Every structure is written in structure tokens, then in C-alpha cells.
Image (cartoon, rainbow, N blue to C red; front, side, top):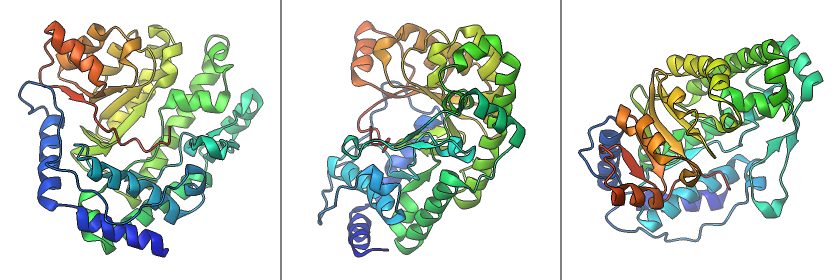
Length: 358
């Protein structure tokens, strides 16, 4: 490890208050397991704990090339959280973005310009590439960005052994494995939305292959950073179950298409990994009920409540005993002002520790 990382880790280790972090974890666990009694869940630390050394800013383009720089990038988010006094949990991840699983299939990375400081994406394979993928079967999950993410997970574990408070109170959450339909779009490209109608059997075959690959990659991840049997971290929050499924592509699909192409694969993964949460960007009020009807969904995270009919969202989540996490303060205020019951199931976003350089 380089000297800058060691200096910063020593600073973080010194600033972690075990009593404070233990209290926050208990509060988050109570919320995740439905024991919050009324009101909105908006935890805070008792006081800010500013750094005692200078933490360098690491750009994501540099972080994805070097394990020590990735560690600095992620642990700085924890340092910033302590300095702000926010109430999210201290968490880090192997932060390589959405192309982790596409890269296993040979998808070429699209690295963003350095000045944007934004995670990479990938070039789609298009239809000819999809045919080659289907012929090739499940790829080696230790290859490409998959292997890099697993290596970074091992680096986090090593750090946690040498710095025991970091090891105990900074949780490592699973990399960005998206959801099967999102991965299908990343591999196929935008013509996927025509293929859903024109070549549904081929799309389903690709979804089956992606789902199996997702399963095998997360099994490999668990060999490095095991999922907890009860609640697991994500983006500084805590939810029941093992995984966070992202379903951004669903905004472009009808409810019938979500039911046919999305739910079977998401449901399999939820069952394999003990349930979990679902996330979507954009508008999702037309399909959210289908997602929350799946066995094992314990929480929903939406990034743009202003694009949704929030009454539909509330009916499909908090009224069903499903937490709504990371909800924007404006949406929370509107619900409270209208007298809308939230059943102690809403977490108001403060500093959401996404760490995705967006």
C-alpha cells in the first residue's frame, strides 16, 4: 500500500467511534426489519468528525486502474460522511460501474473523458455479438472487470484486517451488477427494444444466460466478501436480503413486458440470494407493483420521485410493508404535508453514499 493510503486509513481509523457506529447500525437494522415506529427514518451522527489530515481527491479514471487509488476513492467517501455528521452507514465497494458483467462477455469499455469524473460504460455488442455470446455460454467470471472487482474486494478485506475499526464498521457492499434486463440492454444496445417484439425467444435466451452469469459472479464475490444472512448494505443504507437489483431499463417497457421478461429472472436472483432491494431511475409507477409483488423484495429506491405518481409508489411499497429508502427530502415533505401515512417505512435521503462518481 502506498504511503498516502496508509496515512488516510490511519486518520479514518482514529475518527471511527465504535459506540456511535454501533448505535447507527442498530437503528438501521431496526428500520430494515420493520421495527421503526412511525415517523420518517432520518438518522444522524451525534457530531461531525472532520479529518485530521488532507485526503486527496482521486478521479474515477485513476481509481479503476489501481487498487490503492480505488481504496482512497472509496474510503474518502467514508471520511466525508464522518465530517458531515450524516446518518448513513460507512460503506465501500469495488466501484467499476455497470460494465462489470458486460465485460465478462467481451463488451468493450467506453471510458469517459477524465474531466467528467464519471464511471465507464460499455459499447454494445449488437445482434451479431449477441449471437456469439449465446453460443459461448457462461463466461469466466474471473475475467475482465469481474476479476478486477473481485481483486478489489480482497484488498478491502486485507485493509479491514490491518485497521480493525475499519474492518468492523466500514462494510463492503457488492459491486454494480445491475439487473438482468439492464445488462441485456447494455449488451444488445438500443435495438433490444425492437427485438423484444421481433425476437422474443432470443431475448429470453440472453436473459437466461445473463441471469446465470450474474448468479455465478455473485457466488464468486461471496467467496471474497460474504453476504450477511440478514441485512446487507448498499449506498450507505441497509436492507433485508442480499442484493440490490437495478431496473432502469424497465421505464421503457410496458407492464406486460416487465411481467414476461423481467420478473422471472429477478425473482430467481432474489430467491438465490435471500431477497433484497430494487432500484430504478426515471418513471416506474407503471411497473413498481410488479416488482414489489416478487417474493423477497424488502425495499425500493427511486432516484426521481418527481417523475412518478407517488401515491402509486406508496401503495406499492410502504402500504405493503416494504421500505422506501433514500427518498428525496422534497418528496418526504410533500407526503407529510398531505397527511399521507408512511408507516415508519420511509428513509429520507441525506448523504447517499453511492460513490458512483455521478
